[in-house]
Image (cartoon, rainbow, N blue to C red; front, side, top):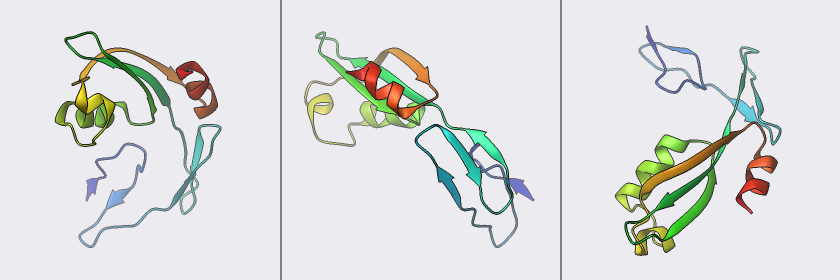
Length: 104
């Protein structure tokens, strides 16, 4: 058996795999329905910048993946157009409401 690569799932996978259902609440606490495990979801407010000092401010729950998307230019928009792909600041929050308030 091997462990899931996502730390939020925390289940063992067999040869055929295992599907795990979970709920993510706005308060930041998630519960794995099938197994009763709980874990905390963290939200991040972050700033990425370009060499020409353009800034982009955003909120995400998966900071590493989101920064990778900025660097690879996966989505069209402001950050891709102005090449905002360097993480210069981030702050961790336990609530999505607090993260969005900080972004504003």
